[in-house]
Length: 142
Image (cartoon, rainbow, N blue to C red; front, top):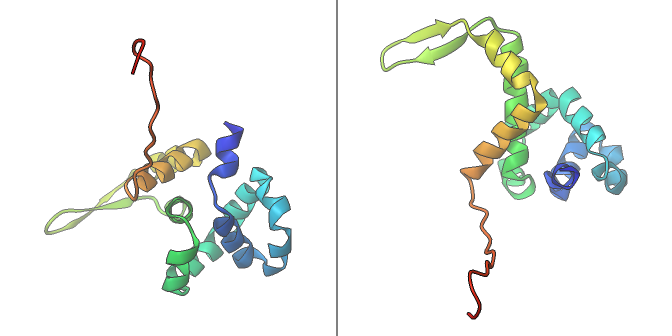
């Protein structure tokens, strides 16, 4: 489990995070990438800055630098912050917008960090397929 937590962000993801939060920290990337709690606190505290850079920064830089998983986590964290400020979400039909007063339940659901990471993983699974081969011996011989 710990190995998964440490490897969920690429070096470029962490570099992007540090450049956004405090460019002076980029020289300490090796130390910081080994501590998932520091990364988690930075993501939580600076979700607004990260969102601004993702949305209004150089698009070419973004596509070449951060992983889809990191992008989805930034977007989900920003959605969580926005939903905390609202008492409803909007459901759209073909001809109208309907307010649904469910944001409290959605915020409670997303407050669980494991759930937020699960959602990011699910979204990432639609961007690329991770595959591998595992040999299984069924019987003697080939």
